[in-house]
Length: 105
Image (cartoon, rainbow, N blue to C red):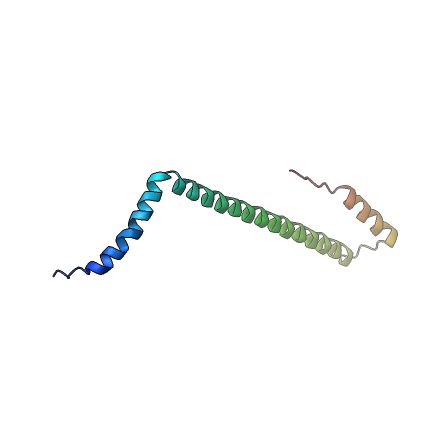
């Protein structure tokens, strides 16, 4: 089935199409630059999201290690080891000295 063509609508759209075509002919690389710019922005956003997720993961790991350490201290104390506060303080100092922070840029 064939529909009749609306000549008036077609003529009105022709001038707009001609303008777009003329612009594309004058600046053929403009669209490619636009897409490159958008792609770079998206890539930068994705990199930032990866950095944020890494920070969150490291924070989660540190918190988990902290909990394990406190749970181990509680287990040692509940197993009948009678330690003085001075002994506990010495252990805490030795634990802190064993901590290493690896910072990379």
